[in-house]
Length: 227
Image (cartoon, rainbow, N blue to C red; front, side, top):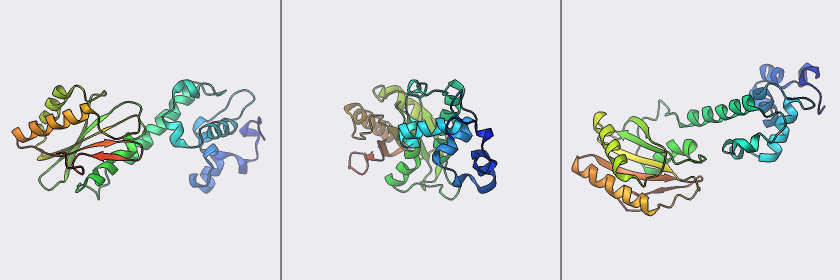
């Protein structure tokens, strides 16, 4: 049925109707994209477009961090569809990053990395997050400092320490990603970690860890005995 308008299909074959009758879990990846796109373009249905995109990228994860210009190469992928697609991926990242009500504390580098891995592992810009904890390692809050790299250690350390003190945190965990996918620390990462630890010691703020997120891997300064 390639090229046919979806509204001309039998109702039982239309992705939106299938979703409402049988549930979204019954739809293929291409059908889910067709529902998201809503329409195709002249000579290509939304489902055809979804199939072409899935065939090209193979997985949603590959698709999630591709350049907008690559998406525009597909016939029918105008700015409205690209915006909906990018917004959907961001919603998914934020959903995966939300703290479960049952999980309000962090007791290991692995647990801290699990909190941030879905959000940070695929980003193409460096993002820096700070986890604020109380005396029992209960999570008080998280906040994000400016995008960029850690080569501006002094301003970032001041901002982190200030935020921690304002929120009466006893401990903090710093987390950032490496867009390359390799979590091994750079020289700037090492310098930043040392400066943050020194600032914490001076103000009785416990710096528990600095975690670098890579491609489904992470590096923990605490695990490596470098804090």
